[in-house]
Length: 193
Image 1 (cartoon, rainbow, N blue to C red):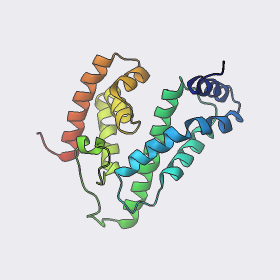
Image 2 (spheres, rainbow, N blue to C red; image 1 turned 135 degrees about the horizontal axis):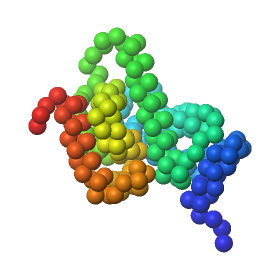
Image 3 (cartoon, helix red, strand yellow; image 1 turned 90 degrees about the horizontal axis):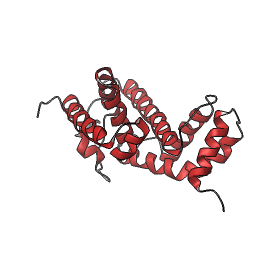
Image 4 (cartoon, rainbow, N blue to C red; image 1 turned 180 degrees about the horizontal axis):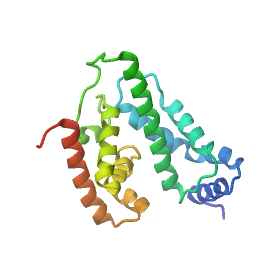
């Protein structure tokens, strides 16, 4: 009986944690489709003329993850969540570089609510720098809510999946998500509604 892809990923992640750099080449084919789908999800919320493509985001994030030395992951979901974090940093850094080049070019960013940001297929631009800053501010108030929000938005995870990674009950995660989403919405829109 052959191992499931989940078991294969877990085994390969164990090899990576033990310092086996050859395991990185075995891991990519097993997680590539999921990472690319996640990157494509992020890109749907970006401006249409974005210079980064999902494949480039996946490749760069993957290289940064596996090239940064031995890492310990608690299975496939944890790896995907960390990869999502790496993709977030790439997109935010790219947005910062672009903003620095434009120096007040203005007008190209459109603010949207978090509910709109989660809507699949929306053709709107999310100001990733503002979102990143809001997540960092939320982390100062409540690290768990910030991490949950990151897993939901950048990891594309359901509340129950994020709860599992965070080691909390689904009911706690649902409460945290409700509060975090309201806080982020107020922060990003500047309204109290």
